Image 1 (cartoon, helix red, strand yellow):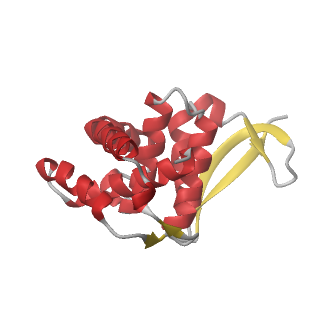
Image 2 (cartoon, rainbow, N blue to C red):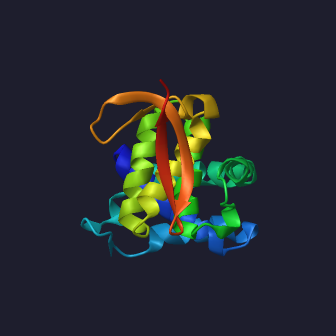
Image 3 (cartoon, helix red, strand yellow):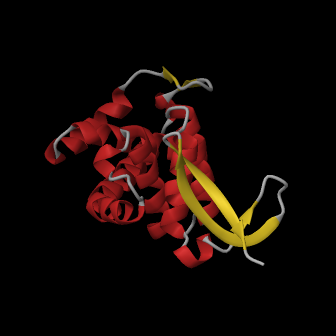
Length: 181
């Protein structure tokens, strides 16, 4: 199982934990591996190709993430302006939790990889705006305000100095770069 497949399984397992009380989670995680093959949009996933070692590893990793959910949610709630975890879609929230966990606790995964993979999962399983939403929340979580407001890439892909701010335009958040001269 490669890292992308592992992350995909972790996402699905973590997503399923939101629907069961804490004491039922281990049993529900075990049921995931008893499921038949399924189509994920890119092809058929064969769960029987997972070794017992892979299944155990996935269950242990998801259990670690579940144990950190209160801490992860606190960090998300304090950073995601105007969005509390209870308002987020379960899909987007699961993706953000998984990526934030990787960023904070998995030293083998670079931050940029975690964010990129989170955006890809959001595009695959989330709504039309999920990729952008997940990217925006994760950017706020990892970049201190000072860094976030100094250098951004414009559409011409040139780095420019300025202050990145948000404003509402017809109910949508719009990012605006004010150049400093």
